[in-house]
Image (cartoon, rainbow, N blue to C red; front, side, top):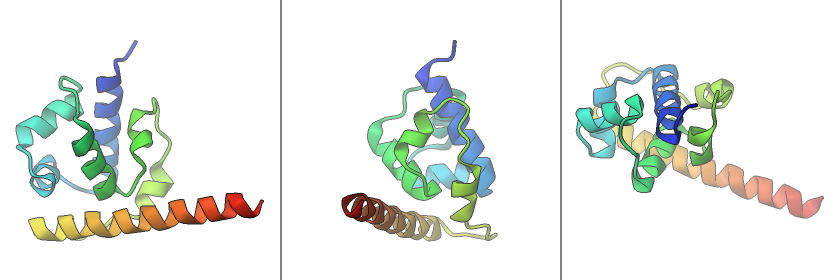
Length: 117
């Protein structure tokens, strides 16, 4: 049976690869060492919640997706993937900020739709 750290690690790796980022790019954009990020992907270290939040913003997904075993979020994640070469560290931070705004907007839409129903 997989631990929660292993499940999160597998999802981080899958989503990172779908998004076309390297571990180094992800680590720099969220302000941690690559070795720490590698440990998160490997499932050997627990990911602090503030880092999970930053990662979900960068990847354009809800944080709960990172906890799901056998995540099937490929389409959602690919829809917000930025596949641009030669990105600067600040570019990834701006992309994460933009994706956070989009996620918030989608949440507000879902809430409004549920109130109408």
